[in-house]
Every structure is written in structure tokens, then in C-alpha cells.
Length: 161
Image (cartoon, rainbow, N blue to C red):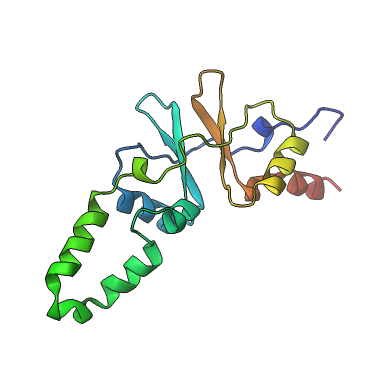
């Protein structure tokens, strides 16, 4: 590139997949798994950032849900044949959870003019967070930056060497 400073807007993902706070947690988890995402911005119906849901939130928060364990339970349902009421109670509790129950309500964000260097530094300091939403002055989500996106400028350089 030229002397122009690289900013987040130059390499962020602009086609953002997001969920709403009232989205069922299992639906959001399915989106994460099917798209191989580490996290999703949580937005209101105007696209304003309400939080961030990450894989880490799904497996670490005290919500009585640990998705890998829940998946294993579903595959071993025959074990619960003797006590289906306990199983049904656990499933009912899990299916009532919404994204708002486990999301980070105050996630880190970038604005479009955050420098590349500051973005790299933020990811180095906050290992568990991925992606980081990019918001405008009104906190409307305009993109996301993932660790993968951080590598995009290297692809440009490599193609022009």
C-alpha cells in the first residue's frame, strides 16, 4: 500500500451476521457452529449494538448450559430412559435461554478509523474476544473484525511483491 494508514474499515468484514437479544440461545449456537464463527454481534432491531455472543460465553458462563456437554447428552438420550423427568427439566431450562442471558453486554468495539496497529494490539491483549464489532458514532454495527481479518493486509502485500 502507499503511505496511507491502514484502518479497520480497510479490512473489516462488512457483511455482518448478527442475532438479537431475544434469539433463542440454541439457535445462536447453531449459527456459530454452522458458519464456523467464534462470535456474533448482538443487535437491536435498528442494528444498534446490544452485546456480543462468543463461543467462550456459551461454554463458560454460569447459565447451567455447557453446549459440548448438552450435545453429548442429546446423543446419549437412552441413558435418561430411567429418569426422563430430570432430562426433560434440563432440556426445558436450556431451551428457554435467550442470547441476552449469556451475551457480553459491554463488548469491546472498534470504530472505522481504528488503526491496524491498534486492532492488532487489542487482539493481543484480549485473547478470548473474537470477533470485535465495528460501530459508527451511534453504535450501529457497520462491520466486524476477526483474527482472520487481521491477516488480510498481508495478503495484499504478498500479492504486490
